[in-house]
Image (cartoon, rainbow, N blue to C red; front, side, top):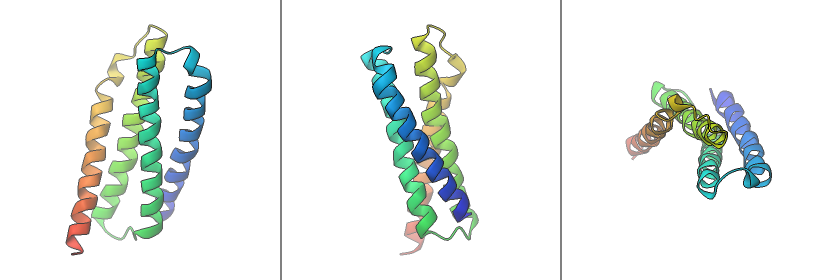
Length: 127
């Protein structure tokens, strides 16, 4: 399971850099300030969670269901949160907003909160 966490960390990190550069250089002229800020929020959260997954993959042994749940919540939450923001921003910039993505963002955020909450619980168990 650690290897999977590390692969996802690397994927999210690499694509986060690509999306950040894409936003800063290409989209800057095509998006409103508000849209660009939303896009950058998606990139920031993606990068934060890439780093977290890297640390967890290197430090935690995924030897329990709890640890596996933390991993899955962070991965799925990051994809739903960040990638739904990218889709919403890009589609609204073309005046064709993909509305079904709207609920994905807060749901992804909820999964991230649950992942962090379970991580805190795991740490409390170790006290």
